Image (cartoon, rainbow, N blue to C red; front, side, top):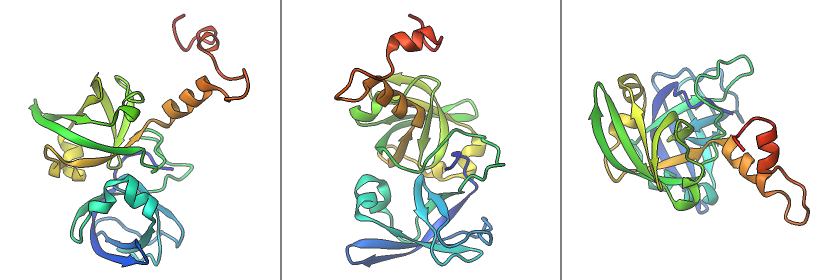
Length: 217
């Protein structure tokens, strides 16, 4: 489990193709990895990977064909900069939002414009993901927890403050870049509850939500 608050950036130092899937080696000069144990989870640009052979400055991770097919990882090259976040501990502050590191799909940056000292980014996601993006809701882009400022169909805008741009890979983003997108886990589970089980009449209804005060009837 993660928060979407990036601890540091790192570099893809090696990519090995082993039997049709990949083994990555990630190196960071600024993130202390000495506490990482083999088998620990690390979010790499929003993708939850299992650390192998960790040292104080680098770790390796195996990447399945499923992960390659569903994320931007298939387009990574040696030398690419990536966002890094260690798994959240029980006593950690939840500074962003609940992030699982399980990427829901890939979006595309449509535009990037100045907005005061910040920048406004507009992104486009597949229609199947767009229904989970809500005004003032949370979204995770390449592992970065962000607030949705506006929604227009399958496009949405986020605001990037200077600190976030400087501490993450977001300063590299240009129109046309593909990004890993994880929607708010609460939205996914709420949809499933509303659907209910296919072979029963049980499930959470809009009427029940209204009675509980979550929505206006």
